[in-house]
Structure formats: C-alpha cells, structure tokens
Length: 245
Image (cartoon, rainbow, N blue to C red; front, top):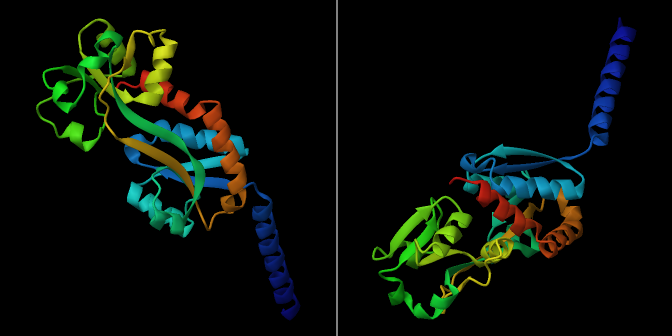
C-alpha cells in the first residue's frame, strides 16, 4: 500500500512538472484590452500590427481605460496604446519612444480663402465641417456661436468644401494632408492663416512586469519604422474613410 502511494505521488509530481514544462515551451501570448465601444476600432488595428511585427499572438479583451491602466501597471496586461505621456505614468510604465502618432487639429479652407481666417472671431458666421461624433479641443467645442455641420468622414468634408457647401472644416493635419494628396486636391485646399494651438501625442506603453519589457528596443524600432512608412497614419485614414461614425 505504501509503495502504491509513493508511486502515485511520483506520477503526480511528474505530471505537474510536465505541465509546467509544456507551459514554459508555449509561445507567449500578448495580453491587451480596449474599451467595449472601440473593440474593433483603430486601436485594435494598431495592436494587431504591433503583435504581427513582433511575430507574436495577441489576446484582446475589453475594459474601461482607467482599469486598463491599472491592469497594465500590475502586469495583468502587457501593453496599452493611445496613452499620453506624463512623468507620473513614466514611473509606472515603460513608454516606447517616439510617439507613434502626433495629431494636430487644423482649420482648412479653399486655398483662395485661407487669408480670410485670421482669428477665432473670423470663424463666426462660417459653416464649419466636422466629423460626426468626434471630440475636438475645448475652445472649439465650447463655442456655441460656431455653425458646425457634422459629416460621416474626412472625405465628405473635403468634397463639401470643394462644392462650396461649407466654408471650413477642422481635422487632424497629418491625415488631411495625406487624404488631400490622395484625392489630388492639395493645391485646392490649404490651412487657414489662423490655427488652433492644440495637438496630441499618442504613445505605446508596456508593463514593467511584462515579458515585453525585454523587447523595448525592438518595439522602438517597430514604432520608428511604422512612422517612417506612414503605417499608423494610413491605418487611421483608412479606418475613418470606412467609418460611418
């Protein structure tokens, strides 16, 4: 009986060891999360791109931003995108430099009308195209005097401006410049003389407790390559061309 118990314990220990060994030999799967309402959105595409460049699989769940930040700090999630830099966050996370996305809001008009907008006051009385559901900078969103006309996407804003249906539209300079060039309209539409002083830098950040911490240099190379090849801005442009929101 004693002999059988010893054999049983040996089998159990061997099985446990083999299970751990099997897990150790399995490829690591990156853990990430997104907000429920954006689970198939632009950040999802960015995460898939980063994982593919690392040659790794990724598992993406959903949770609110505040909880995502907490879980990344703990190491329960490996990676987060769309993060703005702060010294406090830099103490808790590994930021991947440079910012994969630098977005600057700009006003655009027909080239012959750019000099007509010299201050915020000149926006009053003008019809201004915006993207339906998009969030802009406070001074623009809070100005109730402005006549804002929502359209589905950037291309529609450009078309409406060319047709004379609106006077101006506001959008990110980086994606607008690419779209205007694609539409061969970059000589017809330009930035107005007066511009908002508002821009955003979005970073990729990883947990200090994640195996990805050892891949910091590789991630920096991936981001730099993505920027130089316009991967991120092209993904943004394609996403919002197809989006109806």
